[in-house]
Amino acid sequence: MARYVVFIQGAPRQGKSTAAASLGERGFHVLSLDERYVAFVNDKYVDLAFPALNRFIGPHFDCIAKPGQRNGWYPTILEDWTGWVVESVERIEAESLVCEGYLLTPQIVSKVSDRVAGRGGQVHVVTAQNFRYYDSASGREVTLEDLATHE
Image (tube, rainbow, N blue to C red; front, side, top):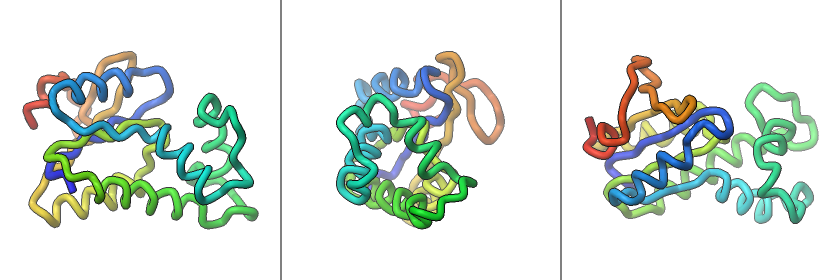
């Protein structure tokens, strides 16, 4: 598991993937939650899958698994999704990891943060907004260079 993890959260089209790609060029392993979600649905919830899912990830998640939704048909899907992502992160052997996506939930951040901290690592949570990046704890604007150098 990575010792330094950057989570990039935010609404669609705000620069999450752009920032992740930039950090990837600086040696970070990139984990796209959009790609993981499609694999998750195709593997665990086949009846919810359809060929164009990769174009409807946000609305699909919001209707099926978004935290706070009442979901009598799939009561454990959010818990299953969290476990799927945490297991994915744990299998990554890179020193630094950037995990980005609209589907990043507080449960995922909390569980991964606990595991990384338990191994002496560091987690940084950033919110993307109009291709600018803000530390989620302080609200302070951060640069990709700050993230790449673990500052």
